[in-house]
Image 1 (tube, rainbow over the protein chains, first blue to last red):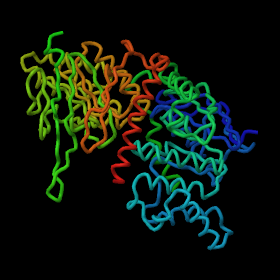
Image 2 (image 1 turned 120 degrees about the vertical axis):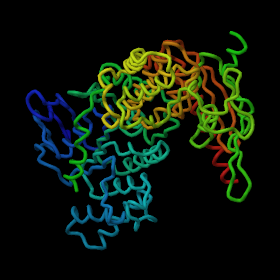
Image 3 (image 1 turned 90 degrees about the vertical axis):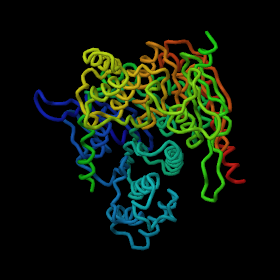
Image 4 (image 1 turned 180 degrees about the vertical axis):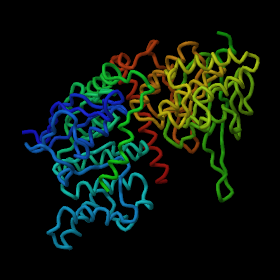
Length: 279
Length: 271
């Protein structure tokens, strides 16, 4: 049974003539322990889709089913990593993670919690920076804290909303490798939303392109049958990599392409609200 | 092609030193040599910090080389000028002007002899070619990053420069928007095949756009490492190009060069 399923989901903003149709007829099944990547243009509605998965928005049409039950609102069973980290600036890296752990593992002893936070700080290689506040950390380090926080709450599903979009190419590559490694060790069901096809191929079991908006929908899925661990250098020689890359890019530049450069998507405006809802 | 056209643009023994705190200096770029023919599209790739932008800045006239220099149509470049259209990573639009106003400003400077109507037509023409006919009156704050860079491209082409200088123009954009803008740039370039010199570290971008890819070694003492002639016929279309049986061989060649340079850099550091 799929642990997460979207059936005929649609989402619009506004009403009547001024309505903007962001997503239409989204059908998606995510299996337990699977890593799915959704690749699409900025402004296509990726964040709207992620907010639906997180339970921060409700669909206008269709339904979202989590473990066989209709999804109602956000919950700690889904850990979200946002592009802008969303860390509390007055708390240290350690305390940001502890905040999540306190919420989820209320019955644990202080010692158990401490050991748990330390474990995830070490997993993202931030033990030395545990006492630093977000402003004392680089973008890459902040995103590591955010990943550690999401994982430490032991979610059933990890939702990654362009987690590496704000980082430079080199840091992005390093963190992709780390996420791949951490995921291999944990095998948490994961949905990654990204605009980077190569990132999707490196990390996911399945890639699904999202067509450009308005009224974006999912295109044909491509299975990534490349054995793990995946090495970013070796992978480029793999004929499977080339064929997947060409198929996904071909769809996004062909049937799923943006028609006009001018159309900005109201979904972009949504992320501050999403942040607020989470804070 | 005349000798002048074959050597339309030349980097001659270009070296660039920067002083260090201890009074000595570091030669970042050391004896960089390259000739670009008229109408050629050349991409310069290399790791960040290797000195790619330094080379481009000398050609732009923004800095003067410590030794050697850049020669454009037989004349040494000593200062910036309107005969070179530049697109930077940041489009640097004037925020209080519309997209049209920003392009118009360049057109006014380059074509003072034309009538106001002719200049406005020119600005409109180039904005239309980059797909912004419906957004010409928008200010830069109302445009997405991709659209702002479209204005930047329109502005550079509208100058009708001798040479186009592109310094990682799509470096700030997400990968799919980058694909779109590469196509916009290439289509625009194909209309009159202006000599173009572009700095990038994106190998797919270099293969899609250029006639030759020049690979630069890692600094200090960076120079031309290897040059690859890109054989794919034009006009190019991304999907078709990527299906070309040799596309990924070329891509591997470039990636391997960059990887080997990264390796060397590590060794330098250890030493």
